[in-house]
View 1: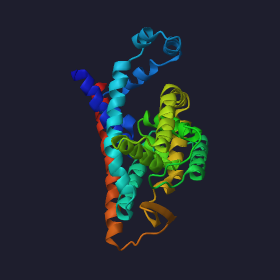
View 2: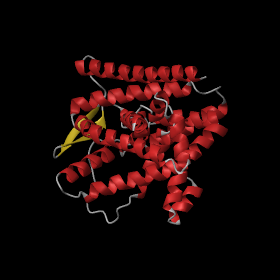
View 3: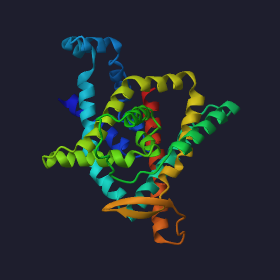
View 4: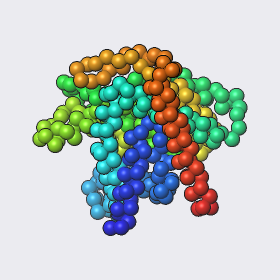
Amino acid sequence: MAGWFRVFFSGMCVGAADIVPGISGGTVAFIIGVYEQLLKSIATINMHSLQHLFSLRIRAFFRVVAWRFLLAFVLGVGCSFLTLAKGFSVLLNHEVYRCYLYSAFMGLVIGSVVFCARLLSRFQMKTVFFFLCGAAAAYMLSGVDAGSVVQRGATSYIDIKLVLCGMLAISAMLLPGISGSFILTILGVYGSILGALIDFVEGVQAGVFEAAAFRIVLSVAIGIGVGAISFARVVSFCLERYRDATIACLVGFMVGAMKAVWPFWSYAYDGSRLKVVDPVLPDFGSWQFVIASLFAVGGVACVFLMEYLATDKRQQTT
């Protein structure tokens, strides 16, 4: 039981990091010492183990899959999501608090960009090319999504776009230095997914089935499951075989999507929901700008602190 609770608590820590754009859950997993075990446990879900499952050889499936570790870890991550989602939704729907929250997000992303850029072994024309490709792709794909927006009257419970978003997010979450929530922010679905999760949980508590919210949560969950089993291996392969090109592309992706975490916007209200309208320049002499700058600096410092702890732990294990 002590081991189970340790894994559960590790999942809670990783989940708390993953819900914040800019903080890598993979880095947190490495700091607390479960990163390698997590990757090995996910790797046990492969074609061989799935053949047992599809053939209804359930006992054989559980013998070859590290289900105890994965179950405890996933429950811990889910617990963090459920407990923190409401707080983030409140912040996202308040004009001043949203500015401070996104200032911290921007600081986290800037720190992650600097950290990832330092992982490059050398700068070449090829590296610059992949950086520019990543930046251009992210700039075109990135959008702004502020709150709890769920689609009503959907005819299907599976949204392919959200499945793909879930796949991309979990692939990033498994890589130290890259934030899955930031990927969702870039793609313009972070607020909608967060809001759908809150709507579904509150509906369950009230004894009401929120079908539209469930559709979003289910689609993302399917994407996370598929991405963890398959696409994460593709990204890991690219990092092993084409390390500099892959890192340069990821850094460009983060830089190109900076507009997704710009803190200062004009706002309107859709009922009680905050709706962002246009980006604006801040009042540089205001207290709001000063406080927002402090949050941004704090975000940068948080990334470097976490990476320092990860480096120190790596040195201790070698």
